[in-house]
Length: 262
Image (tube, rainbow, N blue to C red; front, top):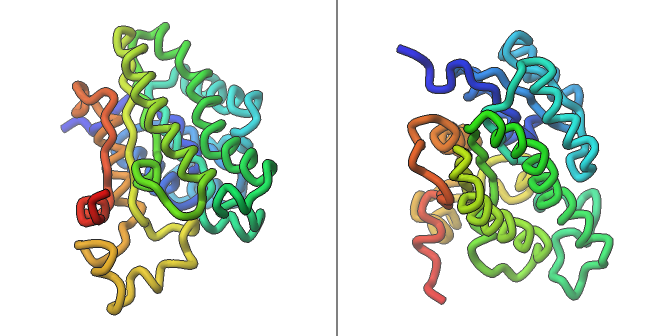
């Protein structure tokens, strides 16, 4: 039986760790050739060592820079001759406070530099990569874009206002792209993860998974795993999701369903 992504070429951003890394490994297992984009060369090399250099090509890039985003997309064309799938996963979260302390603050407690930094990474990377992939998709008459947003892009939040704004914008960009490019054979969808066990939320893992608190915030009683998000990304990237366009898929263990109504 043919693998679900046999013959496909995927560009996966934020592939150094967490969800992006899990997605890269999962896509390769399903027959894809992958350009793994990230900023950490050593972590990308570790991924390649594990899944095989014949399947994965690294692209070291800061995707907030449009020129570097263009180069990342071109890496796929140079090595594999085409791009079929773009997974926009690159981003920063609560752990970014260690680098920029104001980045996850409420708007009134953050600086314009804090705001611009988060927006350029979390939203700018999506815009930049998509801008350069779209002409390729349109020319070949097919393509799948899968964006990674967050359940915090669907609800209000008392802090991390730049983060939540960027994630909300990704969701609406997905909807807009889906209406504009479906006629060219391009599908655009979004996955909204809940709290997933990644370095991005490392400081909260013990608390959220504790016996005392784990059912207070999620009816499933646990955080998700990167591989569980990778499975959702795989579905939306594959031909199995051929009629999915403009979808916003929450993968959160039921956290939003259990949240108090507004």
